[in-house]
Length: 359
Image (cartoon, rainbow, N blue to C red; front, top):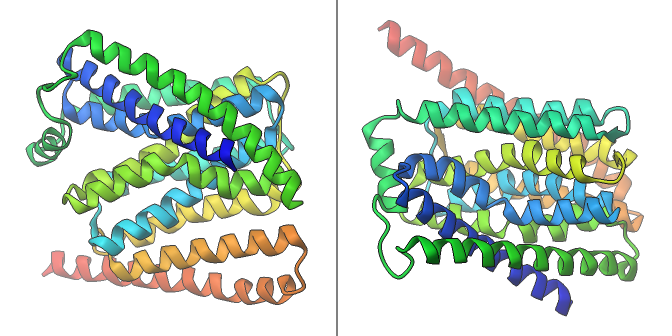
């Protein structure tokens, strides 16, 4: 427990220093706050996932490496957006609905397809890493055409001009180096603690990766999105989660598979359940986001309930609890019903918009 907490603190502190140093350095070189927000900050909040998954893949703890990414993506949408929407209903920018969410869904489906043969090879890792480079170049070029309102929001969030004690480039580079060091150290401690947890609790490393490690490495996203929601920067709150999910799949798993001694073996349980859940969570964003271009408090509560339901299933399954059969049967009726309701609401909204436009 001590090493887990120390590792978690080191990861969060390292991510904070890395994001602060890198974003300030980028601003010092004249890069716009919008580009910094879409790249450095969104990707920087996924630095703990990167550190833990790469360390795990290198050390041969493949279940933690994969479980961390898949679990984080589920946690990001259901828990972080759920909590943020409960604080204040989240406005979803049309670009996120039309572009980023489909890209997130495409990345999720790609991961599921690559894992279908039971493993992710080094060449498949190179493919995903190449896609994140292409995506980053694309959004940087696209950001030049963003509206003045969006640019102003990012100016306010990330400061158009660096100022304060970390305004000097030397301090910014030092922050980046210290942040990277803490990430490496924290990842090592967290992975060792996670393996010990799995042995002590009698559950698989995959379950630990999907739950404790995934939630822990997602703390920077939690802080960023919740603070953005409180401050009224609701585009940033949603964009941070979607951008981080894309980065988790393409960059974190791409690099992990590229540096691993062998293929990343995908556990049958993940292939049969967790990957489909991750894809389903990505797909559920479309009807929710499309409905009034808003995540309401009710939908935020629904997201949280779905995350609780998913976590309860993992616990029941990993412990072989007698209630698992009844719980699974109940969820097999509840989840399709939820999906149908969301699709009907989205269709009604689309129909209403069409009638309004025709009028």
